[in-house]
Image (cartoon, rainbow, N blue to C red; front, side, top):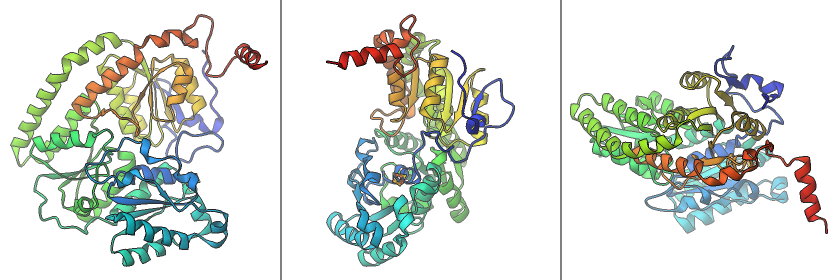
Length: 471
Ligand code: SF4
């Protein structure tokens, strides 16, 4: 298949390893009309904050903004399940004309009295930015009245990219820091930033640290409780897993409380082990921590390695496309796929920076397509051009893969299977194997001789389906 044409505004955002003359053009707004896979600012904030399970999350805007319910997401809580509910002020035409502040105040009074949350996050959406509701003033009134933090999240959808939503979420969380007691925080303690406890992944990672003798003060925001976030400033180190969303908070904590941070990833054997060793090195004043980390890695890798080898034999030479939110996860996935014998032919992210793409190019094979802020048409064409056997992405990439007849692995917030940690690597290999090796892919159009499938029906297919529908 011939290489596709990229719209001119996006040319600098697509690279082919081995044929690159300039750094990736990234960290910019999506080209108008390109139908980016990115979500809006509000969505970015919500993704980060919603896992705080004992807080009230109120979407101040039209009901449509709250329509993509949280309930399909895999973020688990060990306590309250308040985060499972989506509350909206359901702004209508009259509210747009006369303002929605009164409605928000009444909604908050009612919700706080009924659910007794430990805090409330109020998300501003596009229309709130347009009509100029003073959400801060409403939050101040409710904080004084209810005696809990009622925190505005400045997430008007139109004011930037999903990344700006992450930033707004970090600033909202930062208002809670430093307000709790750090008395019971131990000298060897960390916060995990940017893990969302999908399918219980935070619990797996937390156990590893506990086995090493390290206390996890809180995870922001997987299975997070307001009281724990309030004392997070007592931890000695911040471990940033989703760097796209949480680096801003880590930097704020470094500046204000002197807490250093490290970027880590819990996906794949190499990165999971490196995360534990890096943490142990930080606490080098206690050599038993490194010893425990080594024992843990040896035991966990020993448990899964023989099974991974078996999958590797079957999957050797298969090709994958990866399109994820943050670039750091993409690095781990490239390495994890290589471990099970697979090659990455296409890789991209919604929010990567220039250094991320440089690093990505370093670990990918020659000819790999690397893409920033892509769209369904580009992704479909790249998948077909490289004839991949697997697409790894999220809820918005799934239909692209299935329409093209390509196996799919969900590595986003909807997943119900833990893919982090050593056990997660084994789950990942199992999922990839069962998806890629399914015999169903032998019968899809792109595998039929003479039927190169583009994802769209051919003229012949169209006329057949029209004839079928004609009485
Ligand atoms: S905040 Fe704006 S862009 Fe985001 S869902 Fe609502 S209307 Fe759409």
